Image (spheres, rainbow, N blue to C red):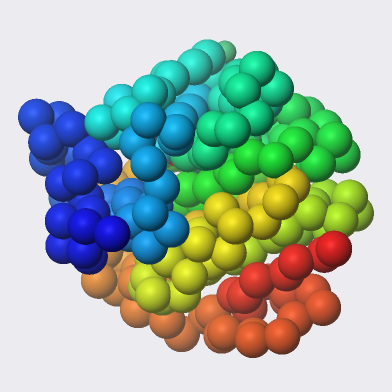
Length: 248
Ligand SMILES: Cc1ncc(C[n+]2csc(CCOP(=O)(O)OP(=O)(O)O)c2C)c(N)n1
Ligand SMILES: [Mg+2]
């Protein structure tokens, strides 16, 4: 272990910092939790690969000082599965957005879950398509206003938990407000022998929060604090709960 403070510097390419994300974005907290989890498990850079799709969160892969791939939109999971199949000794980690993993890439996510491919996917769930300006994503809550749902979203959000649970994989939900919980969830996911999926709720003040009436990202973090309660031993998680489900 290189230690909490140094983990970010160890796993990331310092010349790429600061991150490309807007001030107040929660993605940096997810990224730090990932680095801290890698460090906790002492993952060797030469044995670890990070794969991203397209989106703000999809910029993650290029920030890592290890083998990484910034793939086409929605294709991070099959790309990662290919890497794992070619070399099962590697730790293969997908970092991408809710639109990328659950919208255009939802089919791949479902089949990776069905195949129980031994990879970890960490979904930056900001509940919109952030990079393209704040369109509704598969995670947008019923009734939420976005630029493509000005009267409120008519569709129910996708239930990633149900998909993973149906196939006996690992599912966790956490938020960037609960960053210690998020780090612990990522550690458990990385340790899981099979398909693991972490839904990391993260705030986008620029293209989501502002439109919903939040004055700043601190208010969005406070919202996570108020909405989400930790469930320590869940058989399943309600929408307002965070926790870890190992379905095996
Ligand atoms: C095939 C294809 N369709 C659409 C796009 C446009 N596009 C770029 S990013 C994105 C959405 C990303 O949303 P999400 O995965 O939630 O990432 P975020 O930016 O919110 O982190 C879309 C639709 C694209 N790049 N490629
Ligand atoms: Mg998104």
